Length: 566
Image 1 (cartoon, rainbow, N blue to C red):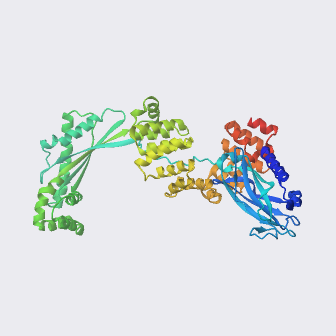
Image 2: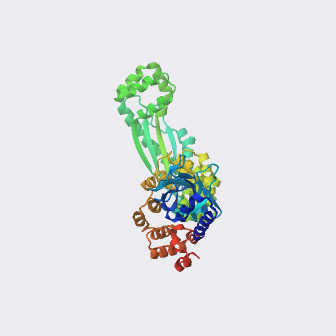
Image 3: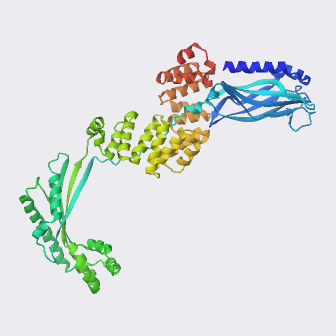
């Protein structure tokens, strides 16, 4: 910073030495009386711009009536400079349309200037390059003076944690699951005896095979044989109720005998219900059929709750009833059987072992769940999600892999992974949120806003606050941010006391660095030293940042500061 100040003074001396316009002799001798101020006093990065509102105040008895000055704001940094729009001032006898400065009373000009930010501007000087000319025909502007306005660019905004809140798409892993097999035993009209053909049906054979296949496994538990026996809703209600009871009892007896003969493993218990007339099943079959009068039949079912009245009304539709007798009612004379098997899934320990030995043996849900067992280990989580993405090409795996890469600061690969997820599921809130974060981390704020404002989730609301911070809209940012990033926004919003209270519970390196910045603004040398020392001990790269941080300009060269940053 001292280097830039010296350059500015040297330019001022050169300008004065080579200016030969006689109408400025007295003005040049009193140039030190010209006062300049800048708001902010130290330039700051806001959004993607560095802005300053500067004022130049000319004292009374200073400005010559025939003088014209061109004032050009220039930000000078190592490796380059950028010039802003010049303003012109003139004396009272100049016949032009510039701002007039009265010799007797003096006057001032105020201008706001913005420069696109370049990281090299962290150490820079904002200066006013003043050129002059006399109010004479063909007179040329010549250097008059270089006036220092402000030093450096504060980049507190860059301390924000741009990883934000990536969204993890949830797994559907269930520790315990239930698998089932169903079968039916069909009965003749008004009969309850179990026919041999029914006991040897493919459905009953499949049920037996299911029981055998799932027996003898410590992680599988074969449940009862749930039996529901029905009668078709034709004939007297009392008769049908007894008929369903007989069918239930006979089903249990017949199957017990068969399973004993077939020597099925385990002790199989029956859970039997006799449910009488099956009007619900009747309705379902009618709805699914192509019976011409099915809508009329369904109206009857809806109009009458008494089963005998229902039966009479349906029988009155003789043509329809004949179809029902042949196609629907026989399907309702049955016992429905179901066997459930409770399957105990892999334990956390078994899943961890699979991750270490052969992760490919896990299914996609187990892989996605496995990553949650390594909370805080970003490298391991990235490895697991990448394996799941490669094997199953599941959008959740690609999304979650990208989310972890964002947390690791690997913006390019994160963006690519999230784009893969978007190709598979572009409507996922998690994917849209992460597309927004990836765009923000890459500096594409417009794309980030388009994504993040298209959804309304807790993560997207927070991340929109982070986007507002990076756009320089600090008053909006503080409304939705939390924790460390809220502290950054509060510093930028001019509320250091609020920022300090937020940082009290934060212990990361960047939180300590921000504490040092606040201490520097408060003139607390001890706070600067202790917090900087803590920050750089946790994150060595912060040493280089501190060396060029205008916030610590007052401490440049001090023994404590040098000891910390070397």
